[in-house]
Amino acid sequence: MNDSVYGIDLGTTYSAIARIGEHGAAEVIANFEGEQTTPSVVYFESPSNAIVGTEAKRVAISDPENACLLIKRHIGTEYPQEFQGTTYTPEAISGLILKELVTAANNESSSEVSKVVITVPAYFGVREREATRQAGQIAGLEVVGIVTEPVAAALSISARSEGNETIMVYDLGGGTFDTTIMKIGDGSVEVVAVDGNRLLGGADWDAALVNLIAERFIAEAGLGDDDPRYDEEFMLDLQLGAEELKKTLSRRDSASMRPTYDGRRASIEITRADFEEATQHLLAQTIEISERTLATATAKDANITVDRVLLVGGSSRMPAVKAALKDKLGWDAQDTDFDLAVAKGAAAYGQAAVNEVLSTGDEDTPVEVAADAAPLAFIPGSSATLSIANVLSRGVGVQLARDEADETGYIHFFASANEKIPYTAEPLHAGTVVANQAELDIKMYEQGGERESDVVADNSLLKNAELPLPSGLPAGAPVDITVEISAEGLVTMLVTDVTSGASVELEAQVSVLDEEQVAQETSKVAMLTLRS
Ligand code: AMP
Image 1 (cartoon, rainbow, N blue to C red):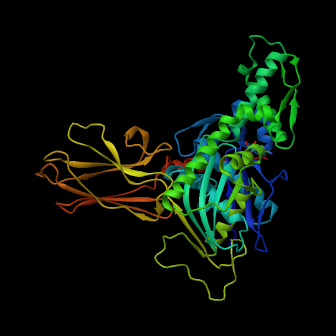
Image 2: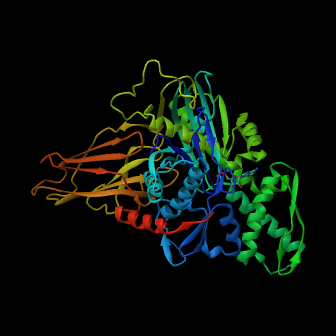
């Protein structure tokens, strides 16, 4: 075992892996095909064999039944997928991608590294973060940390000693969009506000372009009512072609492709202006979310001004992004190395974690380093330690009843999204609902949608527990609830029956898989050979 660690950007459409090299700089490690990013696509070739990456993406066209794409959109949810007679969880499929990345990186650098840091979008809740950790575990890896993509992106830029500055990360990836405003100082990153949409990304631009091309193709090839969009193979082909065309349009003013359907061909030319018009509603959503993030940050600190805007994620390469940020918000956004920045920052975070110079605000004692310790080459500034302060990505609450007749109840929130963590909530003094109540049924919830809602169905259950009560309590007998949230976003809720002093503690270390399922998924993944 050595003390190296990989940083992995586990993306919806592409993933990348990096480490801190000999000279203290983060470097991306190429996969078996020599590429710096690997498509997050798994193709199940046979019951005992799977392929991950570009080749998988290629063969997915002719055999979509055995291919799995965009699995990150389902991580942490019940979404069993059957391939070649075996059912896999999203965590197992993500585990296969992680395994491929690490195997290729170990091969490339002749090492045996198994410690990893994996990145997640800032607005992932507890469930998805834990599911991501389990994906690592299923791949046989030791996950030393989960870090959010924008924090990783911030760590990857050498903000070297321009003093303190406030930066905004605009991250438009393949399947997700997120925005983060943070203050960066010497060896420190403090997140102020996060926002995003987990269902918005380059794939949506692709879909809009696919539609545009298909409509033109139907007209040009004279297909009439014969809509090729119902043909799976035609669509997969078109999707791949459209993605390439989209990338070309980031460089050129127009590009063309020649779809084929039922023996008919036509050359379709798309201009950048056509493409931008067909996708302007998508771009507008990212601007609206950016404005909302700024409003959240300003509500916390009225004097905040964004000094730098960093573009992260492959889709931020589209020229319309920079233009809209300038036009609508007056921001001169700055390029990063787009789809590699996150993996590099994750490597920096991981190295600080294994070197034990990382502080996230949870420790009772601050990180100690020798007085003459050299600055960490891989983090901004000239500090020998790295400190990261984060915010809660989603609100956390408990289900309460208004009165005896209130069967559905409502959610009382202890902490809202964007609350600084670690966090101790104000204790809640509640009461039993009826006289002689036998037990308390406690349900801890996390905000489900983009906005906080007290409607139970809009939230997702994190954990539940029961606290038996002594007999003879009157209605309204006091019950105290306290909540603590760790720097990692883990919630601990303590519910106490004040009369008897009995209490129950709920810890939201939740995930869809229990230990037995993790073991099962691990063995399924271990039984598959990976051929890249
Ligand atoms: P990421 O998940 O950050 O690797 O982003 C991948 C997404 O970026 C995919 O949707 C790609 O199609 C998109 N992408 C990559 N390069 C470009 C480009 N030059 N122009 C537009 N989109 C791109």
